[in-house]
Length: 573
Image (cartoon, rainbow, N blue to C red):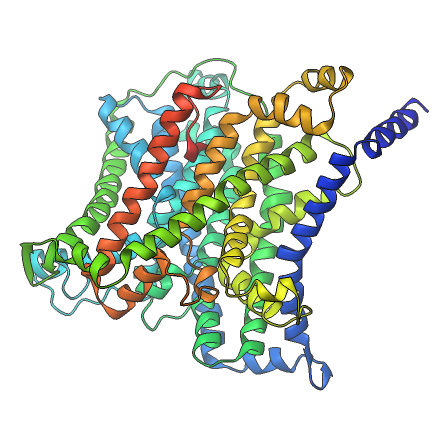
């Protein structure tokens, strides 16, 4: 009875707040229109033809040998990258949390390397891989004297994606390892178990659900990746590149839509398992924090091999990143190593680099504060308010995480260049900067929302309730009480959204028109042509912009944030 009265009181309070009701209605409309509607249009395109509802389009694409091959290729790469990334992520996380390193420099180096790919463009490592191990590669041609080595294909994609995605696993597993109670492992050690035995019988079973979670997240990222297979895949087609070629090369919109639905079904299935089973299981296994600090391992038999492995991987990653600026400074990579600035000059004089950087910067700068604010509003509604549509808002805002960029791009093409809206404002969105900004917002929304939800769950409800009791409405409470308390999450969400937007390619490559020049599209175009000097020059400047943004924001948070130990990349996990 008391619970019913409380629910009735909450309902009355809710409907007595017009700002709150309006915000929820606008949010539902936005999420429905720009996430659910494009995906629904893809389904309609796949099943509905001139002859009515049919599965003929699916039958046709399944009979295409290249599409069947692309599915097999995608799953093979996804499984290998998922396993390798999870293991490397576990290695780096274990070394950070369990191992006593000889110097602080090593700890800082490992931490930096495990964060590097998170805020860099997704295709930088593909360029480096070609320049180091391709036919004109410095390592293969000049050090090993191998003149016919091909880096393109399965192994090229797998190595590059593993180096790109393992930091995601590292961030997920670091938190799990940190929360293991040391007394559990110490009890096993006291009973005579070796370090290896403790790891396999105590530590590993505790983090196994988290390891499975990390594998699935990386698997989803791998099969949805477009940029790396496009640059280093060669003739090894994956689903993302096949969909792109089907719409841009074969002009088969219905076939591309059906292919996109197949890819979406795979990623959605994995996302549901990861989100609603493994994530919950991982949380249940390790709840709360460790009761006390952990005594770090000092045994040389453990520290030496683990440190050597981490150091080797770190040097490999650093080598690949150093390769990009040098690629922009050499006259002709692999043949003429005299230093020159001609590629940087050509970027701005011949290839409209200034316009590309301006367009990318302005669009990303517009999208990032909107994304950060939307993320915090959604987080606030999910954590702090009770209403019937709450589950819908949370699920749909997180759904974008499971939708590959190429799938979303095709959905927007079909939804806003035709679809239901044949006339009116929404029809006019296609081909404009507004549609690119919306895509940036949709793609970055899940990351900011997860960060906001984590931050809001740490705030005592009574702080906001006292403001309501003093007569403040929901807008006033959110702006003056809630947002200042989570401003670190807001600021880090803002810079994360900016970095993700300015380095995005998979969704926007299908939507960008000649009216706009975007850096990532330019890099992709020149890399495909083999113009690595120009591609590296664009990529070097882009890396400088992204890292500069992260450093500035971390500096800003350090001096003006509520916490002095929060980082942009930490909130991505």
